[in-house]
Amino acid sequence: MSMATSNWQLFGYQHSLQYRFLFNRRKKFIQVWNNMRMRRYRVVKGIISPVGDGYKKKGLIEACHRLEMARLATLNSDWITVDDWESQQLEWVETAKVVRHHAEHISSENNNDEVDTVRCGKRRKLGQNTIICQSSSYINPKEDTPHLNLLCGADVLESFGVPNLWKPEDIEEIVGRYGVACITRYGSDPEKFINQSDVLYKHRKNIHMVREWVTNEISATHVRRALRRGQSVRYLLPDPVVRYIQEHSLYSAESEQKNADAVLAPLQRYTSTN
Image 1 (cartoon, rainbow, N blue to C red):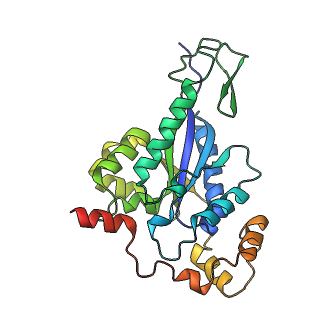
Image 2 (cartoon, rainbow, N blue to C red):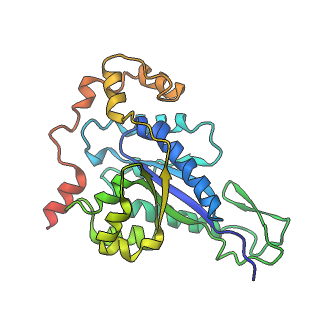
């Protein structure tokens, strides 16, 4: 039986709404989208999920602001969406639970589709996306169900090895059940880390590497520093986001010290349970 190419939905979470997310994160979604197309996958949706305030990262701006800036940054995208479920939780939610939440939502959404089988040339609704069949044969809707991947950088992949930062069963679920789309930069060696990690090596076929050949050395730290000093960040962030930051006086010297004395939520939770 000839099947249509698989559909993928990309899930990306972000801790602080800054340069890395506002511009680079969207670029990463597009890079993965192009890479998946070359591998005969069809990326139908990108989901950005701002972390909740309970994460307790130093300098973390309030979730309501990060959520709105994320929406402003993706206004012109017809496939990247911003989801507020994670950011509205009172306590920090593990990444595995957030990915599971979105996977279940996607599955439920797909099960509600009215069409069980489709022929070539007919359109089938999948949420807000329209899929056109490329095959002259019937398609099994179960095999046409979108598959969710966690989009991350090589630093997140390597953080799986940091003691007390991730639960082993969460790593197993994320990589084994869902899979990871990993953006790699020049100089990084995620393949070496995968080879050194038993669980990542076990599920290495679920880790999709996307090489970032054109790098940009401007970091989130540089942008926050410029904002604190009243310097221009135009062309580094989308104009609507720059205006929002100015209107709400975000990323000041005071906000940079927020949670300075707090312990990062996963470290606090997992250290106390060990």
